[in-house]
Image 1 (cartoon, rainbow, N blue to C red):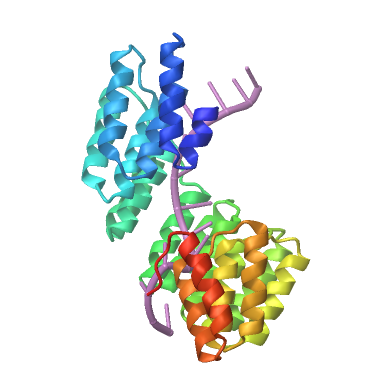
Image 2: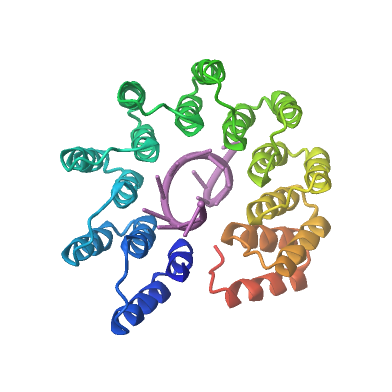
Length: 310
RNA sequence: ACGAAUACUCUCCC
């Protein structure tokens, strides 16, 4: 469980240390431990390491299961190696392992991300034919692909199909639609979507608000940006580092340095890391406002973080 | 029984 924690945080050094300790104390890691480590390397895109661990596991007599395979499949998909991932899927089948909905969803996502929507849709039919029914994740993935291609109508068709099959949209499903509306400047539709999801009992999260707040912010509507920032907190949605970075950028561009400074300090209090671009925005904003002292302070904070100004 | 795996937002412009 601890190795899993380190792996999920990308802290592979600590994870490896613990793993080595396990081995030295004669504790045999099981497939769950290996999976956690393999996943950690997959998330870093270090597929060579991931595969060598997988092979090490096999050498130790542990039989790979659907999850260990799915972890690798997903890792390959994330770096765009969908063909290799597909080969792995075939290997699974020959070993008598039945891919599950997670396996297929990884593949569908991989195909979508390399722009092969046609193949992704085909896979959706294939999985259904083999008795693995596409779920909310499958539909949401495909909807996102359509939306990002500018084919929102197709995305909505999928939403209808999904609802017809009795699947419930998740917060991510709504987020996909929200992002599509906002990116195309349809902020009123975004606001309506926000109301609709609340009515449906789906609680928005920081991501939901980040999409809409970002677009209001880009469009220099800082009044609505601030209103929504307050509204989300009133609803119990906790802003994340992205929310703050979006707001800081917006306020700096609008020359609202007081507000930007306030948010900057709030971030530090909450332990969020300020993005490099936010640091740059703050420095530029303060300099333009003839506030070299504040600019200097931000500059020094930035250096302490090991970041270089542009 | 419980425990490991997959989708969306920031990160370059809009």
